[in-house]
Image 1 (cartoon, one colour):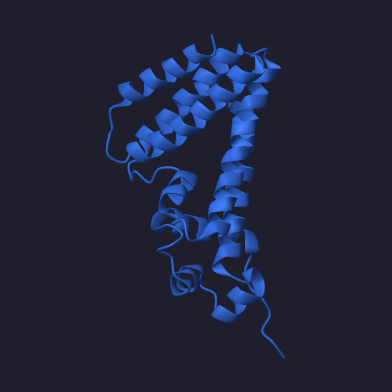
Image 2: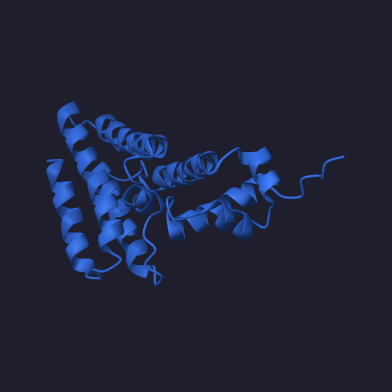
Length: 188
């Protein structure tokens, strides 16, 4: 008779996400995962099938946590430019208040996945495509023309990834806030 599973998938995914966040996908071994998660290899494989599948679940979890954040941050009660400015300024605040300088899970993953692991790279691209489409829809719904909404959304994604990585070494908040103002000006 096999052993009964005694762990919560959701908690394991949360813990795995923190480990991937710290070490990156490529640098996290199966041994790292099973030790950090406190589960055996057979339980790991029967539950998640592979490191890649677990990482995909981490991406889904991270995305699920961020969409409500975007919804709340882009409050429809304020003018959309102010909502966008507030969201990006709050992002900068989070980066500057991160004393561990861990950056963003997805931006870290993006920079630590090598081209030979295309399945993981595709999942990361899908995440950013969803977020970019979210911003594009938000801008279009507020009257921004299609071409401009697409360009500004792409710029926002580039800013989010770049600021996350750069904030690990550059703690000059004013430079990020200046970029936020320039992004908002692109809408005009």
